[in-house]
Length: 347
Image 1 (cartoon, rainbow, N blue to C red):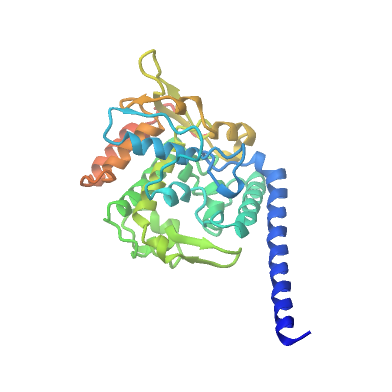
Image 2 (cartoon, rainbow, N blue to C red):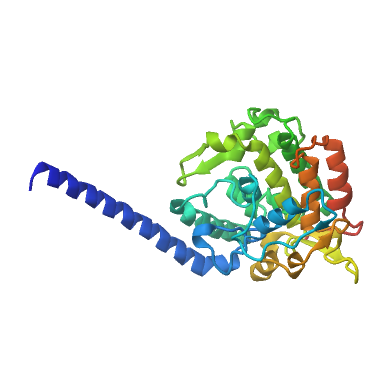
């Protein structure tokens, strides 16, 4: 065998080893999905193209598509019935960020890490419900810890409805500032002028753009992506929409329904925010899948995840108009979307 043949054989061996490693990762993912995923939730089910199946309804993406079509219209269309015709208009990374802040589902080799984090986070939260906080990564914190407000949920078994809403408003003010350009992506998180945000990331030497563009390619190797950081404003819009949409998911909040013969898919005030570790995971997951109301058109004066998302898109100037200042957006979010009943409480 000559040197060239030897080199070719070595390359082939390396290729086979890489393929075998990829296969092992995917087998590991399949095992984790098969044993753990039915008991997990990723808010409204997120569409992952490589592992799409009956448990992945791409609901956030479908709600976004309907909301984009609803902007400046008197009525809102139904969501697409499948994932294929979904239109993102640049907001895909943002609508998924709250569920996957480390972009573990961005490419195949880290799918298994996402499933492992879900499994481990669930294990920890069941034993010690209120312990996942700043010392954990944002994936753990978002789904099982002190940042569950990213999904319109309580972050603690002892947290009041008023406190959960305060955290939601803190986050939406932060993201709105980024979305309309008032808060630059180059600003260190420690200097964000919104009470609670610097404390949320205490000790992190990150900028706003770092936070929104972080990708982990292994458990210990994470870095911000420059090409994603350029879309920080759109990611921020999507993050707000995610919180808003989750507030209409039956496993996240309890809201009254105000439907009548003429007006469908109308929701009332939030009566309580739920706390995920205290819930039955399978029942929660059922509420995260596409609901019947999403498959019918709705009037703009009905409060639901489509109409509310369209209003946010209009406020940030997604239709080409001038963005509205935060006080106007705050009045809508605080006074309409996240209005809570006086007797409401988290559980």
